[in-house]
Image (cartoon, rainbow, N blue to C red; front, side, top):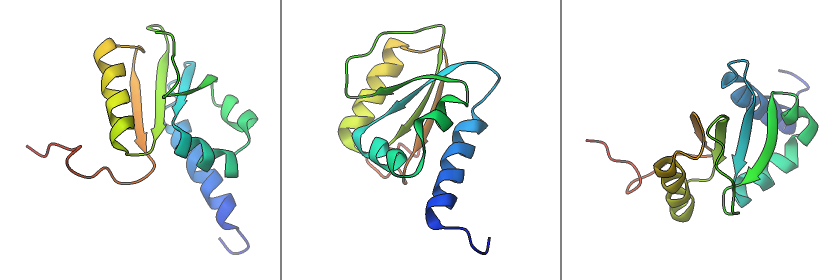
Length: 113
């Protein structure tokens, strides 16, 4: 990848990751403050919306339930964010969920049993 910048690599990685969740259906992208800053620094919102994303929502904000729509969560592994995800899953806020962390998810969040 000679001549490719770090930003180009990050942009491709983010878009390819969202693209991998594409099953030809429309979806919502759910971000937190940290992942939003990461994405805003390297990806244009239009590029995301072209991947069958209807809306970009912030997990910390009040959001409507949309049981007919899939959701792609691209999140930072922080305790309050994990709590928000767990609450969404318990409420079955979306039809299907694709969960992507911006970095490794460490104990005590992960139960290895």
